Image 1: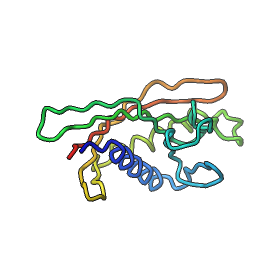
Image 2: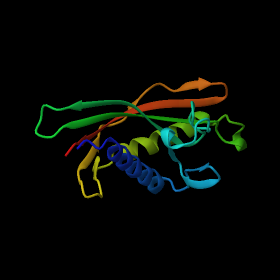
Image 3: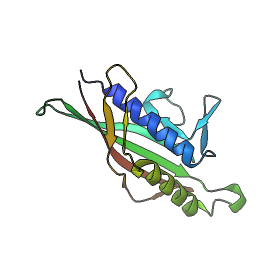
Length: 160
């Protein structure tokens, strides 16, 4: 059985745990709850702050692609995960440290994605491994006073 949602949830949980371990201060408030600074756009309410842009100083995951290769013994799912993040800088520097703040987020993301192992096992009866590529960073973009970046990660899982 192809369990796309299991693959997405497993990657999200692993990524969120790695971000929280690397920088416990990276948090976000969504629906009045403080949590590690990673959100998944499809899991939030329509029209929420994560709908269309990333909240400042948090990572926002969007699932933008899916392919299934059925030519092997088990079907291979390939999901494209777009990770958007942005910063306004800090108020103590009047936002003029946006580049440094974005570079810090770049480093946190790169460490979370590329640290070994680049895989995790699902914790369900249909146990399988979820593994992923390195992040492909797109150029930073200035949008008004905010610096933003988008990266893509390919996430893989074998169907049962």
